[in-house]
Amino acid sequence: MAPRGNSRSRLLLVILLVTALFLITLDLRGVSLISSTRLATQTVLSPIQGFTSRLFAPIGNFFSDVSHLGRSGNEIEALQKENEALKAKLVLQKDLKGKLTQLKSVLNLAGEAQYKIVSARVIARGSATSFSQTITIDAGSSSGIARDMTVMSGAGLVGAVKSVTANSAVILLMSDPTFRIGVRVAGSQVMGILSGTGSRNFELELLDATETIKIGDVLLARGSDGGKPFVPGIPVGLVINVDSASGQLTKHARVSSYAKLTSLGIVSVVISETGGDPRDGLVPPKPMATPTPTVTITVTPTPSPSA
Amino acid sequence: MFTSRIFITFGFFGSLFFLQEIVFNQIHFLIGGFSIFLAVTMTWIAMESRNGALISGFIAGFFLDLSPNIDSPFGQWTLVLTSMAYLVSVNREGLGDLASRPLTLSLIVGGAVTLTLIAYLIASVILGEQLISFFSVLQKLTGNFIWTLILAPLYMPLTSKFHQFTRSSREI
Image (cartoon, rainbow over all chains, first blue to last red; front, side, top):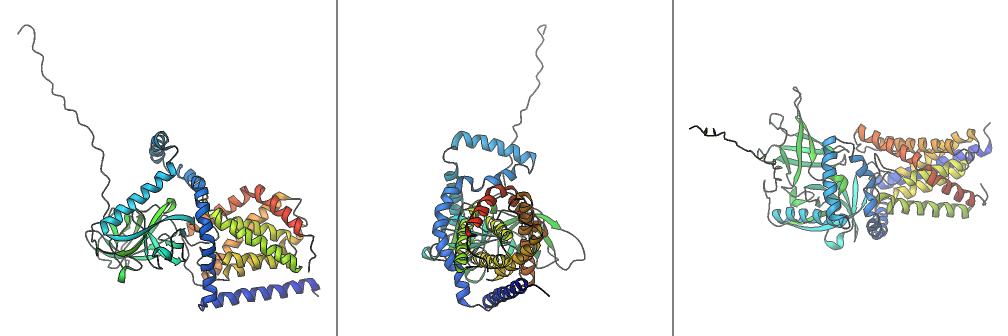
């Protein structure tokens, strides 16, 4: 016969598990009290997160920056050169300048597309207890931000607004596995669906398997009805690998995003688009190859002194 | 567990939740991240009686469900942490007093955190949620395990001392 304490523990376990299942059922049935609890938490947390993000800004990326050092020899060399230059020029204003640069590039991109945007600071990055990929920004409905709006950085698409409170918003990053966006290839206009995979690369599935796509093709957002959740024309990513296996019904490719999702400091939420579809106008310029100086030497015979 | 003790536990996990959301979520940890909340919760549970562990797991799960960064249904973390609390408390009973064996406690906590994340993933699959790639899952689990072990000398003594302090109240 089981001891009395054990049976009491089992009874307590059953009661607590049933309560948890009851909470899950209520949430899945869309009971507003449950769903608004998280929004209330976000409302309470965001002002404090805004304050602490300023405090932790210099060390926030310390650990991830260390990880980048081991990627490749070339990258390390380039980073070292860049680091030396930065150290010489921007020792005291490194963090501030980084944010200003991000803000400038996002304003440039938004200006070209004639998007009306609200820029905001990233005050928190997801949660280690969750497998979903989100960030929290310090602007919310009081700045005109609403659910399902496009979020971009200076380089391109970042994600979409998932939930909003008065002074903060949670952004679902495009790397989240639940993230889907309709894209088209700049130039050829081939259409496909891009999905997040939880990693740095993305999966592209072409709608028509007979269409061709190649490495280096630029992907732009196709846009949604009323610009929500995605405004058209915004740069999404670059094709880095095409799956050319025959006999498949659909064609797949691997894509890397333009926006560096792991080091976001400033992002912008597109409130409205005033200039219509920019078509291929936002395709980022290809990196220019550094010209190699050519020296031509013409050999001219020296006249002999006897001549 | 006395009502006053439940209030202390509630306050403790509430503060821990704020610490995780306000401070630790600002830091981009290498590999797969680190959850101070899960690490401390598992340490706390490992030092509790069976009933105390169950209630602590339930309260901790409830707080974790409040996180605005979480996409899962409200109650999923409560379910997972209550189940894990039972599993940890039942299995640790045979190991005796863990407070005097910090290395064993660290390994148990590290393993429990990893198991908790796996249980959360399984619950997500059952509830029809979309999962990230296998590599990312592996990276997250490994990262959490390593950080939980590395930072154990920092959070474990503090948790242990606070737990001793609350033990002055009577058990159920």
